[in-house]
Length: 127
Ligand SMILES: [Zn+2]
Image (cartoon, rainbow, N blue to C red; front, side):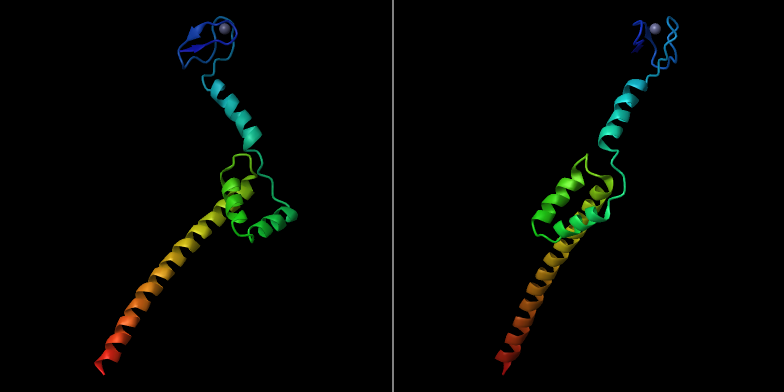
């Protein structure tokens, strides 16, 4: 059920107009109005970042710890410029890939080092 916001008459959800006062009864209106406002206030910042924005971003991206914190803040904050948010998320993806690769690399080095040591030891002890 939807209620006419002007006269209070109740109608089915699919009613387009109030037959009492002629008010438009768009059932999506209560939803779209706040969403539109939300879009306006929090998702509107899609304008291109300036040269100095990028300069600053690339600077902070080179500061350990601080960069990760800012990538998380920018990547998941709703009122951050959309370009900066996407850039931050992309940086987080690369940070995650780098982390995985270094773990794999360390693990491989440990295994390979262990194998090498075992082989060397067996060769040495065979003489
Ligand atoms: Zn009405």
